[in-house]
Image (cartoon, rainbow over all chains, first blue to last red; front, side, top):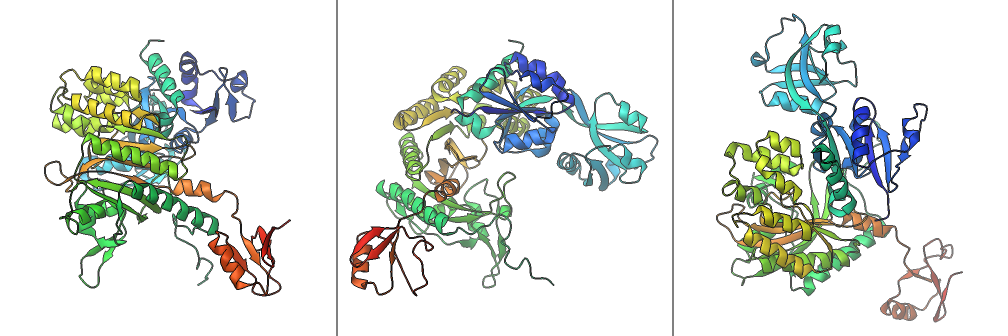
Length: 217
Length: 373
């Protein structure tokens, strides 16, 4: 068990809130990590024995599920979207709060959801979206976009969108209104199933984050 | 139409070329030999059966994940096996119904699924395993776990780690000391499975939180589990686990995760997963179950399966084997003698055949063998 652990963190929104939490759990990246001009993707950790990689949020889950990284931090939206059986999400870090919601144009005059059997939706979360609508007997045809979902209704790509909402400002500025919340979202510590079972360092890491989340450290 | 993709194999299927095919044969035989030495007799069920019999005996085996088609003879649905265990169950209940119990059976062969797992594109795998039919007690479980570890070692696995679980734990607790609303059981189980403490609380399973923490190295985890077990409903299970762990001794690293359910759809009180160094994901799993598939009827049984493909992939990269080149005009009697002495011979068919190019390490010169420089 001499190989260093790899810890994956997402670029962007969650990262700033995650760093202090990681620090309290003893995961502190080297100084170069905070250098905005540094283009490296992999960083050493101050307490040795660990390497931190910075990747896109969806890729955090993929790296950890495949065991290429043993642990990481990612929003519960990503965990639920993939629903990988080999991923554990043992600790809710209580940061990066937002929600996954359905939105539609203001005064759209669209048929209410209870009266339709088919929908066209623009989203970054096709699995979560179709699962959610399936439960209501609606077949959702998802148009997978990687960003700027808010444009889709006005340009006729779809009637509605499913996207992350935190303040609701982006929706408002694009003439959309939130109608239903699909899922409340917060950041989770995730670990690879096989790694947790076979590498005692993972158990210690989970315990450290758990202590932070419960306010014990 | 262009014919470029005429020889393309479908996704998730591959040829095993000489090195890896040789490793596959060697590893499969090593595992079968271990089981044979423990008194397990090999059976060979067919590749294809009626869908009904493959799906009927065990929960969690999904017919929709099997290759299925209509039998032109009987007009019933046939399926390609995705797991050999139910076939062995069928044999135990039919052809060998009258055989004395406990009945020890072993098997090895390919299994296929129509759709691969999200993380592993393979659609065909080698499954090698054993079933002990007639008992699901502690002694049977201990025998099977110990043999599974032996078999994994014989297959070349190193750094073996075994994770114990109690598949029916939530059902047991929900009807006794930690009562749950029947509607909430599925949600609680799901959150326990993903180890999601936040989700578990939200699903109404707050009283199950301590179980999440009772996972880890066996000795400390079993202590924590014993503390949770206030009413003693789990006392026999905990004692059983300790007995199995004692039998394993130092043969493998042991962990306990009492709420693990993933992949243990049909197991009853005891389940285990085998991990090894260099194998991404699991190497094998096993546990106790009832052959009919429901808790009430059916014969008790204990078994395990290994999926040795990752070990074969590693072994296939090993060094090439030794072989003797037989030049034109060699003496067949000498060659036969070499083969019976354990040598592998490769004979020249024409004078352009070259020893090195054909992968030979040695050359026959008259009656003596010389290493190639």
